[in-house]
Each structure stands twice: as C-alpha cells, then as structure tokens.
Amino acid sequence: MPLHPNYIFEALSELGVSIKKDLLFYEIPIERLHDNLNAIYYYRKDNYKGPSSDIPEEEVEIIQMDSFPMLNAIPENTLIYFAEESKKGKNFGMFAYIPHVLSLGKINIYGVNHVNWSEKPI
Image (tube, rainbow, N blue to C red; front, top):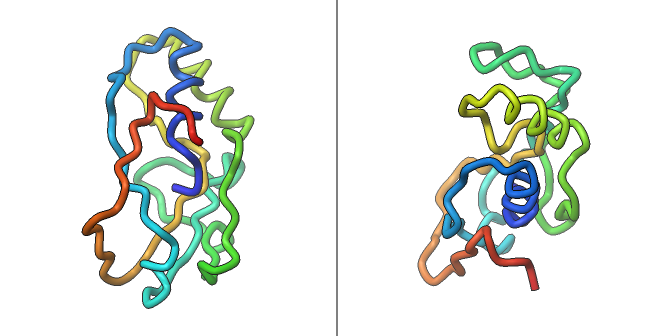
C-alpha cells in the first residue's frame, strides 16, 4: 500500500471504531521490488463493482518503482466509506478505495522495518 498505515489508524480512531493499537506492517524498500513486475491497482470507487467482480483493466497500470509516489492522505472516498460503514456497526474493509501496489515476483523481507500503525510517520 503506498500510504503510511497511521493515516488509516487515525481515521478509524477518530470515528470510534474498535481497532487493535499495535498492528504491524512491513515497510518494504522500493529497491526490493525492482526485479519484479509491478503494478498499481487504483481501486477507484467509480469502477469498483464488489469483491467478487473482476478488476476493470483501467484500474491497473504497470509502473516503474523508481518513480512511484507515496500518498500523504487517505482518499476522500475512503473517509466517506469509513464513516458510512462504521455507523452500521459491522466489520468493514480498512483499505477500501486506497491504491494498492501489486508486485509479481519474490520480495526479500529480511531486515525490513516493521511499522506500527498507531505511531505517526517520521
């Protein structure tokens, strides 16, 4: 995911959603993806047809990792989704409408940093 997980933690916390505080994520350096075939799945609300539907072709783009930007905020549609779903009182997806990086190949995770989503990015 091209977004620091703390943004998700903060958004869910502000809504009063019951979440684990010390959830850990791998921080995978971009260099470790250079030998793989990489793509971004944009996960736009307008094109999303549900979890059992095929991903539309226009939602996926092959990318070069050396020029890939990180997001510095949660997409507005994700915040709306969080607010609507939290009111229902059921479990819901934490990564809805947030672009995903997909990498085909091996990724060496030896020695990578673990990021606690409840801690703000440095």
